[in-house]
Length: 381
Image (cartoon, one colour):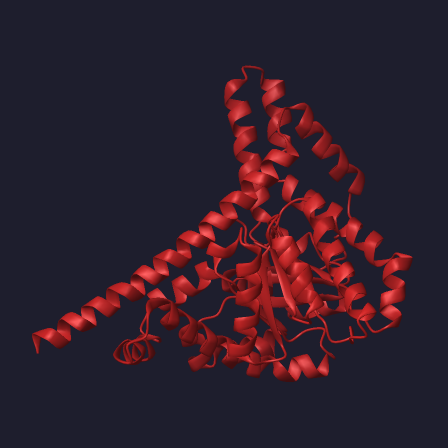
């Protein structure tokens, strides 16, 4: 049977791998994903690096060498991450060149401590761009109110940007506006815009996790079996509906005369990237979010487990525009029930920033502990 992951290309969707792990790079597993599963890009975040660096021993030798050199904890983090990102960028470089800069990117996130610091974010973008020194790098900036001006300025300066932690349609519009304004600003300055790449990372499964929890509270509070059944029928639907409605905004914005003028100058569309596509609820089909958001000019970034499951039993069809009327009706019904779209998406953004910050600090503490242990070993000799 044909690999369903490879079939996604026929529908205009790219699959990126949501993970960087040095053990996989060294074993050849990562290269196999590129060659056999058609993976064309890579995303990462502080949680992913925390898991990779804290488990196993692939990073031990470099960490100990950096500690012996007297490097500070943040410098050690940068050195570990930059080395992996450079390795991945070089492996993806043929895809980047073959696709004329559409695919073949690796993403590296600025420190989550900068999520509400515009100038600090810009300084980090410039610093990481110099450190990694690869044209197929994308730097991730969260779509916070302070992140948006940094996103526009970084794009104007010519950096490839992956905008992360987008949950609401309104925030998506602001992100797309930042991209278009940056291209227009660059063009007005006489700068080339054909080499700029950007994706808008729209988070999926976390929407269901929160909305389902709010619906469950209402089910428990009701004594009416008919009302309980109605509430249950709404579970597991908000995430896909949200992403499908965002795709309609994508088509509207990038099908506009405004973007047509930029396309004439060589601009790429800013593709929606479906993030958080692993299924959190075991009651749902394990490839639900991957199957229901397939369509042209999109990217799906999948963790390893989702890639394996989709390869095994993913069903491929054009699904991104299914039941749009139902999607619109769903959010009206949720609002009537007192589940506020604005409140849900704001909570998810706040929690997303906090989760990445927690992982980042956990990783720094892990490096700090190794630093201390090495010092103690040296003293005891």
